[in-house]
Length: 71
Image 1 (cartoon, rainbow, N blue to C red):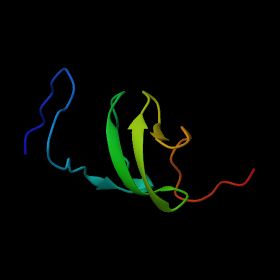
Image 2 (cartoon, one colour):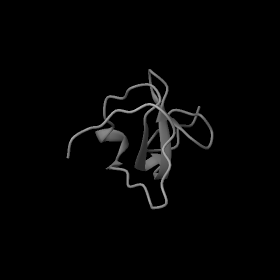
Image 3 (spheres, rainbow, N blue to C red):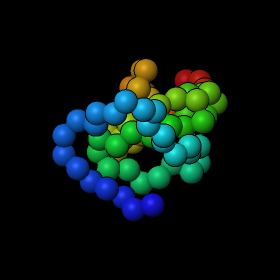
């Protein structure tokens, strides 16, 4: 399937499908992209956005991680 770029909101009356990634298979992103990670919230699934440097969890803004990081 070809990639399509457009400007403006996405309006749909159906489900939008996203590719499923893991933290280990995270693609190179472009700022503003969204992706679904099956293990990006300490091993749990999460929707994330690319901020220009890292994939960030939509719920907390933290960088995705496959396991809980203890400091």
